[in-house]
Amino acid sequence: MYLFFNLSALILFSSGYKSYTMLVIAQHTNITDPSAFWEKAQSVVGATPVGTSVLSVFPSQDGKTGTCVWEAQSADQLQQFLDQASEGLATNFCYEVNEAAAIGLPERKKEAALN
Image (cartoon, rainbow, N blue to C red; front, side, top):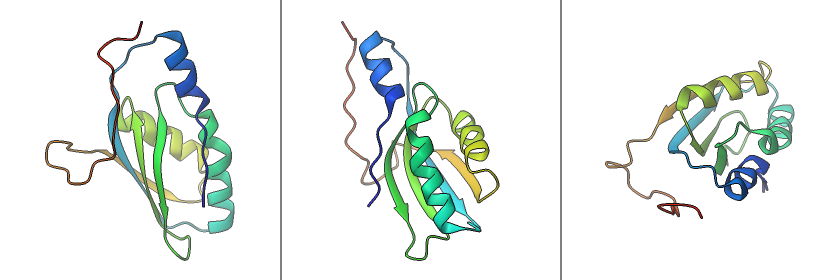
């Protein structure tokens, strides 16, 4: 089981920063060293870009592929972050979720305004 904490999200919330986030899927394939990749994933999650947080992590049984659900300001921003963070251990592909057509979206709590 993987546990993640996102300091960026806490800073955003406490500072009153308002920004639109979208759901982004990150697919990780061709993982060359599963142990190193998933260890690295745990270590970088707390250092994600502002406005970015991981919601779910689904590694395959053998660890050679995985799918993660993120909240991010853009799929491109997340793609760049993951490519740099994975240090060549995997091929990453990120795309924005079509939330209107999706089934089984994670519960997302949004406030109209932060005081």
